[in-house]
Length: 185
Image (cartoon, rainbow, N blue to C red; front, top):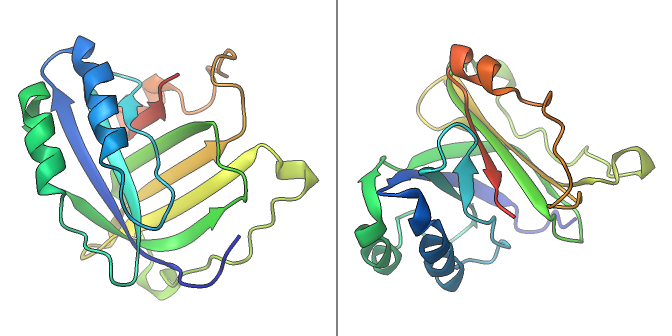
């Protein structure tokens, strides 16, 4: 993992597709428009509603946090509504040398972050033998507010393998206002 040129900001864009069958076309547009120095996180799909999707980028110094106008124009015919982009200050941004095969994202606007402990605490995560399936961990808190959290976990599990239904269960996420997304296989 590189500690040189750290991620400065995490940018989350959430939007709703006009129909679920547009997902393949949207994924292709997203993959063609991938940009930046940080390896791309794939398009993420809500576990609750497959028409809700999210794009997440880790930006390094000098990279623009503005949405890609050309990408948005290409996606507009498939998108029924865009949410304003959300910016997160990184607390942990660690990545293994080998890219993950599966991603899961949880986002919430609830929960108070202690401003005295909001400094970047990254750099201490070790991906040793007990955590070999973890390939990426990003944790961020919203810029400009003390409430909320973003957690992205990338793993090296087989994308076609059955998922552990007990991890990040949907009923819990609905009651607590947590939006959960995962990469599609």
